[in-house]
Image (cartoon, rainbow over the protein chains, first blue to last red):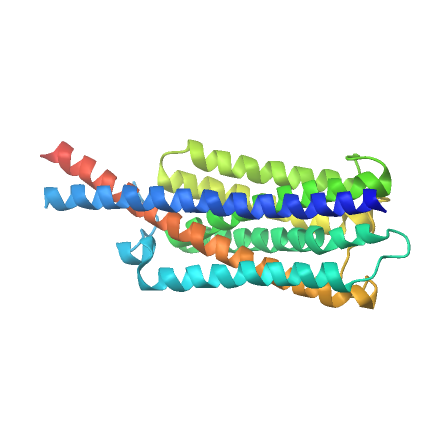
Amino acid sequence: MEEQYGFVVAAYVVMWVGVIGYLVRLRRVSRAARRRLDEASRGAGRKA
Amino acid sequence: MSHAVPLESDSAAATGGPGGRGLEWFGVAAILMLVGAQALGLLTSPADRDMGHLQKIMYVHVPAAWNAFIAFFVVAVSSLLYLWKGQERHDLLAASAAEVGTVFTALTLALGSIWGRPTWGVWWTWDPRLTSTAVLLLIFVGYLSLRAFIEDADRRAQWSAAVGLLGALNVPIVYMSVRWWRTLHQIQSTPSTVDPEYVVGLRANAIAVLLVLVYFTMKRYRAARAERLAEQLEEQAALEGRGA
């Protein structure tokens, strides 16, 4: 019985590691994209 | 020579803007719903006659698998639309859904492995369902690598659309593998094949993971749009610099 609980807990932990891990990655990617776009827009503005 | 219909230069939409906050609230609601659905499944479903409490792994494994399939369906439709209309937004949506689908496929395999160890006695076996799912994962890892290596936006979009379509064709094979071949894996878990006591928990978790999938895909799409707009501005600046 206890062994069964261990596998159930492990499954839910893996699910949340996946969800939270991808959320963190999304946050990083979004921030980097926004920064890159801001820099590119500023560069285009300077040229205009 | 560019043939694709480029994105409109709407940096507010790409980086967030007024709609960005709505998406974040949607994400918070999706995560809270996932917590609620998991609590419902864990606390209200009785132990299974054969599997005991291990049955509760179904509430994470099966929704992850279904939603990976939905993500790859979005990849297939968006890739077809890109090849037909040549609009970059379809390419970016396909890429965003492919990335999220890959995450859910990896989770499906990991969770299935954790479920397989106590029920089958092995972490992994070359069963048709497991093998076809692993092939699906490898195809989309290849898809994402392809996108990372091709610099020309048009070629990247065209090749990705072709690979995305081929990869999505594998989904019906994965789904039907448990009926077409003799497998260790049980037949598909759906509300019509599981015990009625588990249906509400399964549906609630499937909907919650679907909302998380929508949030992840939309958030990734916004970032992809911003990346592409920046790329276009950089290309334009390089061309003007060369012309000056």
